[in-house]
Amino acid sequence: MNIYIGNLNYRVREPELKQILEEYGRVDSIKLIIDRDTNRSKGFAFAEIPNDDEARTAIDELNGAEYEGRQMVVKEATPRR
Image 1 (cartoon, rainbow, N blue to C red):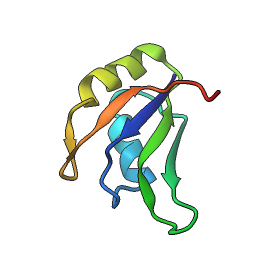
Image 2: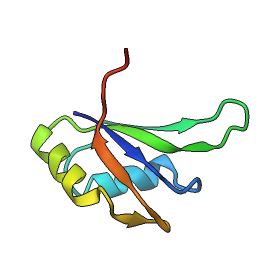
Image 3: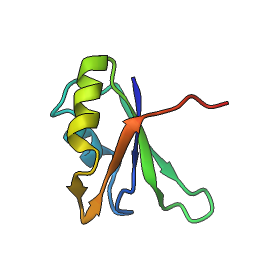
């Protein structure tokens, strides 16, 4: 399952985010979205978690949780159109 992680502190990096998500299961990939003009984080990322049950647990546990001073928004990502 592809999940969206939003409202991240701009200092958060991919390895830190992966470590948090790996508490709930295997994480295939993390993609922190970077602004191409400023080369800084846009404050959101996508993670690929192959096991849907583990992904749902991560969503349930992390949505609304505080990390680095901000409440994360974690939900199933909607496909691009």
